Length: 389
Image (cartoon, rainbow, N blue to C red; front, side, top):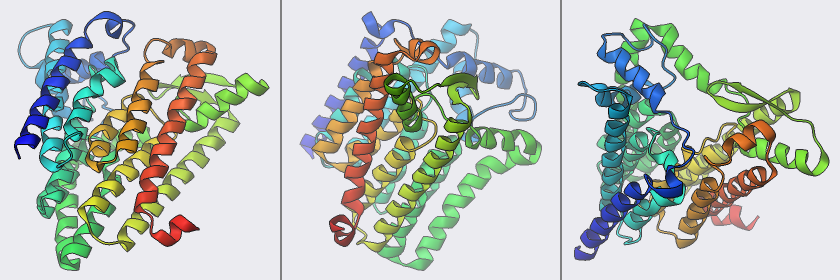
């Protein structure tokens, strides 16, 4: 226990030092931030406007608290930015502590603590630490045997950003195998009830606005940094394939018939990988190790094979991979974080506007590392017969 406490304390100190270093030197250059968007949401809410009805929001309702809290009280954009960064730093510390509580592996909180330096300044101005810590807390509760609370926490996490939903089938299968169908049904109701209680009030007030927030994510084209786009950019540099960038849905994407086809194929591959992980996990024993590995594998598959892959999506993976207790997985995650930092934000506009060769190859390398991480974790979930075939 002493070693776990010491590891958690070291992880917290490392996180705070890493967070502070992001404000200096080359980390502080050429930042691409989302805080002005969050500030606009927060100020609208403090002015009495209702989200989704009076102004559009591109995120689910449980994301709203982290937008409005930094807007409370007086202050301009600089004050909002400082408050938002402080809130994210607090959530990062919470993430370290949750991982330290849930895992006996002494390296787990250290991995989370070092993550800001590995990934870079994108962590300062994205709210993804909020769903990440909620998801980590859900997994920690499941590990502790608090299944109903764990599925409830997973419902809140899904209402903050949709990706935690891919963990629900894994969590419910674990509960079913551990305590039976009735308990799994109660946990499913907890997940659905919390999610509905968060989303439905806004859906009743502004059904069109809520629908638009969800559909906007599902209807996005092939984003520039996705695996499918990375292969098309590689073909552009090697074979002269003609590609066109188009800005829409708050990102830069590849436009045209071929990218649209690749986007569909990416989604099908993503779904196939998720279903395989869900089925393989459900067929195996209900151990804590398999729960954590399957959870990390599912989110990795969702990120690696999706038609959208923004740099902040890697924040989702940090606590989940740290909980897996696998040095190779941790090394692959670290490589993916560093490879992202090598081109984002410094070379991002070179990539988006000129299809810069160096940035293109770095994106492909990062995406392939994520695929390798997904395969590593998935093979640990798959039954022996599937692994040998």
